[in-house]
Amino acid sequence: MQRLQHNMFDHADVRIHYVTAGMSPRDGQDVRTMVLLHGWPQTWWEWRHIIEPLRADGWFVVAPDYRGAGGSSKPQAGYDKITMAKDIKALLDHLGARKRITVVSHDLGMQVGYAFAALFPEDIDRLVVMEAPIAGTTGMESVATTKFSQAKLWHFHLHGAAGNVAEMLICGNEFAYLRSFYLRLCANPDAISIADAERYVADYTAPGAMRAGLELFRAFEQDAEDNRRILTEKGKLKMPVLGLGGTASFFLPIAEQMLLEVAEKVTVRPIEDCGHWIAEEQPERLLQQLREFVSETGGR
Image (cartoon, rainbow, N blue to C red; front, top):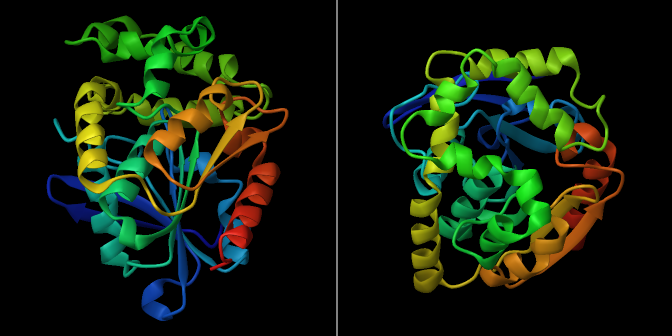
């Protein structure tokens, strides 16, 4: 962790906190960039086990807290994934990373990663997505209707409700509520320690943070409209797409059909002995899959 650099970037209505490791594209023309987009209720800390190995592999690693999370500001609006993807685009342009980008995205960060790839396909060499449905697809519909997915993802309905009902129910019980997700959706209960959970909860109990996190869910209807429109206008993603899911989670049964709705070159692979929190439950297996995918898709 000693090689990590923490910085802030101001863009439009938001200040983005981000972590970097490795030589930046401004220091060398042949530098390749890997962007790590965290999920909910997490921050850049989700990637703590893999940032240094990726840097050692020669990547310029960028792990932002997306708007509303962690050290980033919590504006009132802009939690549709198109706006959030534009935040990431502005950050990468600021860092000089306009080409040779691999995006690795998890949970609701996966929805931002997909939006980024759909909006800026010329920037991306490959896209890795993990453990979330994409709004506007049949995969999203199946999450809402299948019994298995409902048992795992019932909170989509609570968090997406209009008004501040979710905030009122969670208030005063933040640690117990958030930690229930880390435990219930995992195959390895020790992967997110008490100290890690306390770190996440401290971030999500900062002023405005819980509201901002829930706004990501409330934007799903807008996200679905945006995704269908962009798919009609631009067609499916052309870059290679890798879907990774834990064998003890909900994602693998819906992944291939869902990703083929929006991408032409799709590979889906399991992470064994793993639940939803892949980067924390099985970081070595995740690194292996990332390295193999990069090698298979040109190694750049």
